[in-house]
Image (cartoon, rainbow, N blue to C red; front, side, top):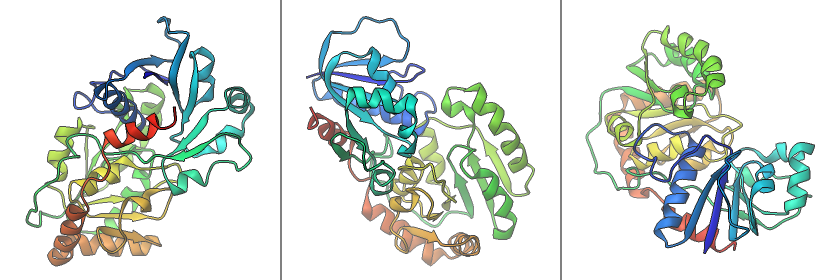
Length: 319
């Protein structure tokens, strides 16, 4: 098939994985592109505003997040690949091009699908993401590591709150791999993130690290004790938690957004219902080797889940 995959920008090549830090959406675009190419399709990557010549027609035309992208894309079976809570589609600047294009609407899971306005037209499909290499390789069981917790998400998604409650956890260290570099050094994100990162770094026991390419990040995660993430209403999948679980890392999360969908509560991690529960769960995982080992083994047994060939096949079925 001839497939066009479009994103807002900046340009991401299919081979970007492993070469530099990437955010969740950017990772997904690169990995879907890579997988579609491997499956023998003629893939055309397009980024908003580019002047590259596009064919007049394609078998499958996938726009990421914003329906206005369809205005500069060729004819063909249209698919809108959603990555954010879908309430924004009610806004006229998104709704009008959406109604004109009438694409199939792809969400990432149960929580995400529930954010779609029920009256929107179009076929609906849930296609969960898959983890990026090398997180897709089954890891070996390991001994309980020192009490080092990690945070690997966008600093705007709860790092401030986590740093505030960290002194109550009171054991070990929190290592945050977080910053604007994940999003191509976006100056607006950098400006918003700077005071959050500064406040976090000022908390005793919190250490900040630059975002890492995924092979380097995996090496750090397998040396950590657990991942702590309070979650965010804007999380529709959360690759950060999925990657941690694939690495055999128990997680403590709150039931915010889709984050709780990424773990098996009480088996591979803990879903806390309050801040006090979150603190207590973090303390337990940081200090109780038997609990850690049980959840570590369960996460490894669960495995990395679907792969990107499965994701690509689900998109092919929409053509």
